[in-house]
Image (cartoon, rainbow, N blue to C red):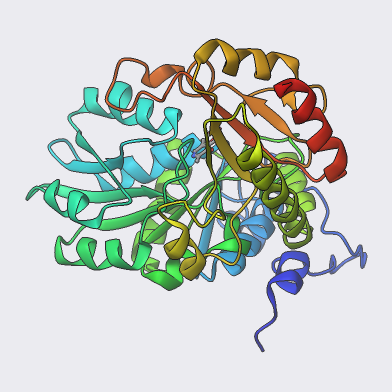
Length: 378
Ligand SMILES: *Cc1c(COP(=O)(O)O)cnc(C)c1O
């Protein structure tokens, strides 16, 4: 039987506890497990780096939500990325990354993986031809974010899947901004989905984590080997908190989208705002594509003030929108990417405009959000 998304979020991997009937699966806060005899771990559990029932619940739930066969979770989004990169790539391999990649992803490739012999090129990921032009005989992965962070560019996942198949490269989609509720990259031809579960999946700004979801069982086995061998796993309590959050993903995303659409319209009409970047606006260059491959347009909005000082002033003035990095939680956040989340790309070809503001629109009362922005802009 195939269940709907909301049902899977609440039940996949989360059967009531067999022994006690506890409706919510317990937090298996243990590092090790009693074995029935030498070499006979019960249900295969022997040590919590290798396997933990609470982590398994989360892994199974995320796999179901992305429509994949296997899920693996990690201590952070970057730990998931690092495990994927070191499982798939070897020295001399080449990777294509978005020219406005998440700052931490860029840093991982440019400042860490490069030292171990990996090469990379940045491409305009919303332009399939530009990505194709950057392919070399050594290209192992095409790394995509859509919508991108912070410029909210939209990449054609199905189009890039065709390009990556021709190149015998893996198409990796960082689905953090959309969440599996709004977009399912595996169904569009992606090979691996990456998440920072810290963001919409956890959804409450109280836990850091990451995940990989895929269909290829051989690659999944290899990733599981590296998950254990490299050890960047999430703990049982973090896995449980993330499961606690993901149950409401669908209702949260609907409200994030409702509020973001209204904030985008408000900003687009405001005389002090130079440009609003939101895939839900018809003038956004990726609007049509986003309409095709996403259920709605998400909770992230970027806008430009035309003047860096004005942008910093707005960030320093809002009250309901909290000045903070990160995104995807129930509370609204505001930030200045150039000096905050994306400071690590300053001076590179990924540098972001200095007058740019990024909003993570939360699920508070919409009138309070609009009034807060009106005051800060006025
Ligand atoms: C936050 C984020 C990451 C990194 O995840 P962490 O959990 O912070 O390690 C990767 N990609 C995107 C798009 C992000 O927003």
